[in-house]
Image 1 (cartoon, rainbow, N blue to C red):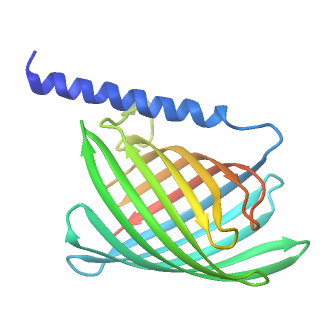
Image 2: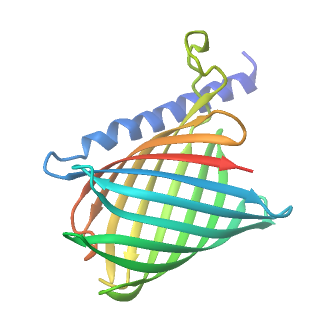
Length: 236
């Protein structure tokens, strides 16, 4: 068997093992007493120039009773000209959060994102470092450091298209881990595990559905959450 074929098969085996481990691990760390939430959202990325693009996003968050408890909108600029493997972005996010009863409070958040990408044995890795500055009504201002590692295995799933209405799409699994450190508590306050599937309909339309496990000791979110997230991504 040619060497390149053996390498490709080995990479697929490694990727399948890693993503399978993530997909099986996420539901196992849930607990029956933890709260469930649903996070639907949408994002759009528009090319402004050869090395610049703008991003616009919005997300809503519902509790297990179907009540809207938070929503936010986000606007950002990304520069991709430093290196092929590096993106730098600046964003502003407006957050509205339900506190108690019908009382809502807002927050302003700015964040700087630096994302590095690499590949090993066909597996794509990315490491995003995010520095946030938030001004929450009633809590004051504080900073947060976030580090998110994402991996994508070197294979994609192709359903039996002859039996489906939508025939031209592929499914790509992924997994990630993110840690939060904020100055409000001066400690690590959250761990977020995620496993999901990206459904690529076209080069410009991508759907994403995932399971998120969030463990938190933050003053803002003291409970642990099991979350189903669904996002539509439009690329222009």
